[in-house]
Length: 228
Image 1 (spheres, one colour):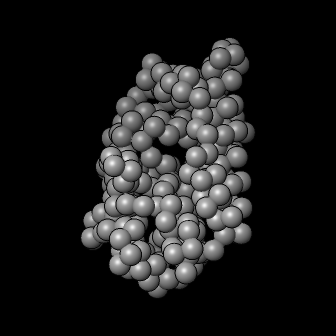
Image 2 (cartoon, rainbow, N blue to C red):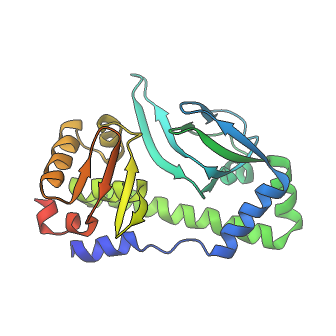
Image 3 (cartoon, rainbow, N blue to C red):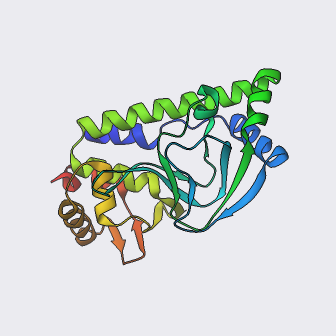
């Protein structure tokens, strides 16, 4: 059952390439490529949406800060992701923070252009609608996963989301989240994250140092050996 579920998540269909290309082309044609240094905010909670975004190169987190000052990360956005449409369409302020985890290059497209294109260009409207719907379904799947799956499954899933293929079936993760931040995302203790990573390293499923994790056999994590 776990193996089947793992394959379902890892093979979740992506948005059609035409839809992605159209959104990217829209940002390239009408937007501005901006550089955001590591640690800077693309937008902050409560701010008025000034545009939509397409990540040319980089990594950021969508997060909140608790009253105690703790950082709770909800989602990761990486190279090739578009975001920020929903607030423009709904006319609402940003409900969260978007903070860069790497030095990032991000296309920023003025909100007025998005609104005009939604009303005047059926293809653009369709592609933006698909992007938003695909994101919503992904968020629903994430919530279901966090509620119903065991901690090792959730950690393995998060590592998959963060990884970049490097050949031979391996994926590489630049460690931009510490164990505390990872634990906040998947709903467990920092100690549990550390123990699982150490165990998987001993089993040869992953290798890591202070800066990187390499996933060698992520499907093994979803099997009985990685879950115990």
